[in-house]
Image 1 (tube, rainbow, N blue to C red):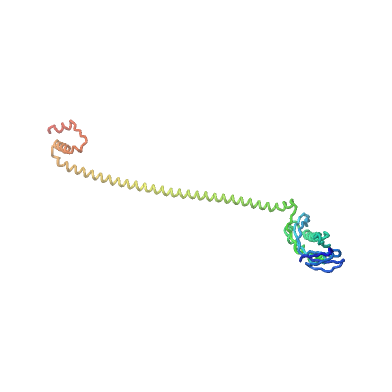
Image 2 (cartoon, helix red, strand yellow):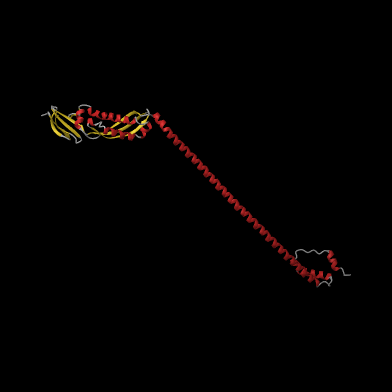
Length: 307
């Protein structure tokens, strides 16, 4: 009773049931009862599996390069794979009885590395770094065309190179020209910025100079206008003064003439009488006279009888 057990596999597992060394049944996702003492169970995984790798190779110009990538594979012929590798499964422990299933990715890695090396040897270091994905595609195509994995029932689904790097010293040497180019571009940008700053400063100074010239020109025009106005004003003032002087002279002449006419009435009169009349009139207007001095000579002349 205790020699009977039940086994159930997953849909992505191809199971081969051996009883007394002979295949009794096989297929994916099987479930069955079996006798422990005379039954062997082979479980071949048919799902896709990813494997990482790192290759250290030499290019066609003898430069070391490290290629890191990943490939995906699956077992498409479980019977063939089981005939070459030991996929015997222990249901009690839940593991394989040998390490052959773990060796399968390494066998595929060796084949991938061999085809990758053939492609790298045809290229220089620079070409290898630039054409890494093309190298991967060429390696996959050759593996499929030459059926290198078919004998073990494996199909290569995809192959990718994640990076292709030279040694640090060579990487620095390869980066140097580009780095120098970038530095020259940076220097050119600095010089261009300085030249632009100088040009802008020149434009500013030129604008300032033009502004000063414009202001001086306007100031010159203003001075000329002020001078013309002052000259015209002086001419007008001179003409006005001349006209005023003429009027004053004419007025003086008229006054002199009027005075002469007024005095002509007294031409035959005694001068002492004229003086006496003048003193009388002055006396009548004494309120308008501030100070009046009459000398003894004037009185003597008035009192002296006419000879």
